[in-house]
Length: 183
Image 1 (cartoon, rainbow, N blue to C red):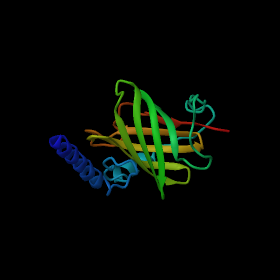
Image 2 (cartoon, rainbow, N blue to C red):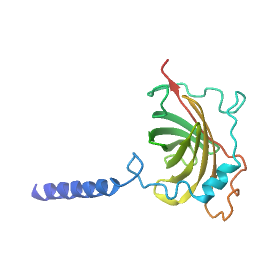
Image 3 (cartoon, rainbow, N blue to C red):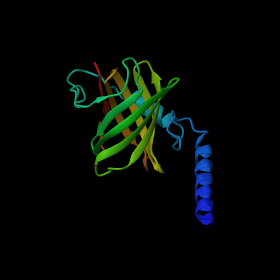
Image 4 (cartoon, helix red, strand yellow):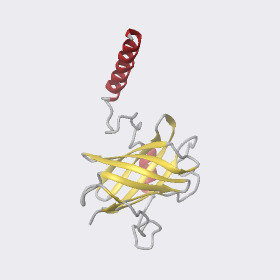
């Protein structure tokens, strides 16, 4: 009995140490922060990336069927996300001029993997860096266009092993977000 209490107290202590180590993060999710979210490579990628947000864009049609929590005029809340390799769920939180997205793949070859995106918001444009949680070597640039309260069109690039921004899996790789708010 005493040993199990000591073990429980030790595990609680480890949890407290782990949580206090996370207290200094910029992001609201308690995971390791994105390194250099607005580096020169990010700015260079963003310069040439245009997302028109048109009605014929592949993200224009509402593909989310479940109503999620959230308020009109705020990005905060639950979203769905998709990219060429998968589809999943995202938590979005805005703090000052930064938008943080914690995205997890639910479908695809990377099912169960999670990424943190930190982007600066300037008008309806998002520019920043993403990183796979637990794998700081899997990182890259992101540019997004906030079309409305239920739609963010996005483009990304992996900068892993790429000395030149522009080398990626595909020239127009997308990472889009949608949600359906209660009317």
